[in-house]
Amino acid sequence: MVLLLLVSVKAQSQHTESYKYSPSEVVTIHSTLLNEDRKVYIYCPKADSSDINKRFPVLYLLDGENHFEIVSQYVDYLSRPDVSAIPKIIVVGIPNTKRVRDLTPTQSILDYEGKPDTTGKYTSSGRNEIFLAFLKKELMPFIDSNYKTQPYKLFAGHSFGGISVINCLLTYPDMFDAYIAVSPSFWWDNGYLLKLAEKKLKSGAAVNKKLFYCDGNEGGPNSFFHNDLLKFDSIIAGKKIAGLDCKYNHYPNEMHMTVPIVAYLDALRFVFKE
Amino acid sequence: MVLLLLVSVKAQSQHTESYKYSPSEVVTIHSTLLNEDRKVYIYCPKADSSDINKRFPVLYLLDGENHFEIVSQYVDYLSRPDVSAIPKIIVVGIPNTKRVRDLTPTQSILDYEGKPDTTGKYTSSGRNEIFLAFLKKELMPFIDSNYKTQPYKLFAGHSFGGISVINCLLTYPDMFDAYIAVSPSFWWDNGYLLKLAEKKLKSGAAVNKKLFYCDGNEGGPNSFFHNDLLKFDSIIAGKKIAGLDCKYNHYPNEMHMTVPIVAYLDALRFVFKE
Image 1: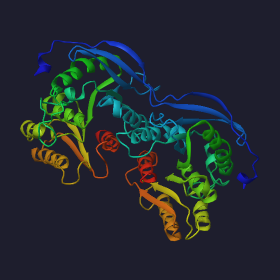
Image 2 (image 1 turned 90 degrees about the vertical axis):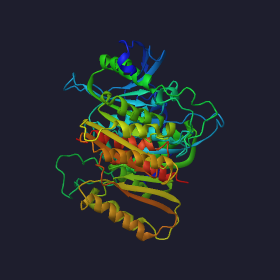
Image 3 (image 1 turned 90 degrees about the horizontal axis):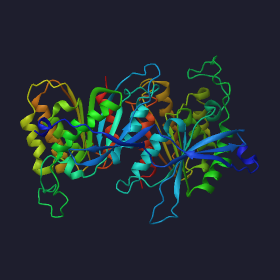
Image 4 (image 1 turned 60 degrees about the vertical axis):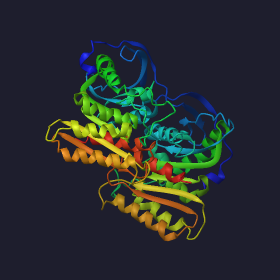
């Protein structure tokens, strides 16, 4: 009964300092293609004292302002020597400047019901092609020349970020080795990407890629959102692409904004399951 | 085909700065009870401009050096206005100095098989009572006088931290409102806490507490570890304690060191499900 016998004691603060998380940095680069400065957030594993020249796979993560912190914490924890659930990787978080412009594959003002949106929020849409060129021609060379990168690259995004990932897989499949699309907005432009998937994915082709896609409870089990994911899953299954290692997870207990928390954890472990 | 037509461009870094995560700080206080300085990590939500006097529940988290970052990131993300899965809370992470001394409830040198350990690693065990007094008499008053706290308190720990949490629930149940025990090492001292639970928990008592406990794949479905959790769950069920809101999760796909990642997310949502 120590608690009851104690005389009153009161701890005094001796010293306060700011808490340092695992080191990450913010780099600003100028993009000629996008004609603007872009910040990127970079988590880089500590050098391994047993191999200071060790190089790491790189995860390019969209919506960096939303998910960089959680994902880099996952990577940091899961790659600890006493956990060893995944290898050490570099995470490059890309925060948005003009999200609709950069992350949508076509120019469209149709909303998720297929009706014209009159608020103007989609008028700048359809420049994902340029954004992917920024990744390929500007960001990746910068990262590869300034950090200890391996060639192995992952691309991950949520919602509009998810359709960017799928658009990249369908149009520039060689850009990445693993694609992670969390709750991709397949409704965009009347299901543009579902039609593109049907057209572009080649039956029997060996592509040697990993693909993770998922959705949460986004309107319930009969919602257009969930049905779109089922359609995509069925297109993928129908093509029987030999070298495409796929996983579809449905998270009925997660909302659109909480899916990424569970999905990125599962996706990292899926990609690095070997 | 923008990618193919581009002239070669190379982004230049204009500016690099360190990445600032949501503000957390490290405070060093002197503990008279433990006769040592103790660091604590404190994540405090940003003040709400609509109510700058708003006060927050406090989560006291053991093994701060392992799980403070992930848990504070969960709290930060899940309490964002556009996510709103849990309320804003303060997280106090407590890193270890002498883990075995502080987190074990009895003096014992028996290992998980009940055999005497000869390596000396358990010789300092059994001072959890003093450590709980440190929390109650020194740390909590310090936190309550320096941060905008509500009375509502949570206590969370993993492994030996998990048995600290259960020991506190059984011996000083009024210290916290919610108890989270992730993969508690019930094997400690020949199942000391299982016997204590049988003795201390009162049938029919109304305690108005929340309790979350869980385990992963720690030796398989017939392991002593899993069986201990099932025993505890059965004791809890048998007591029919009206005001104790309990949840037991088993994570067969998680290892001992990955259980906390999924469990702390589920536990936070369980405690704040209303």
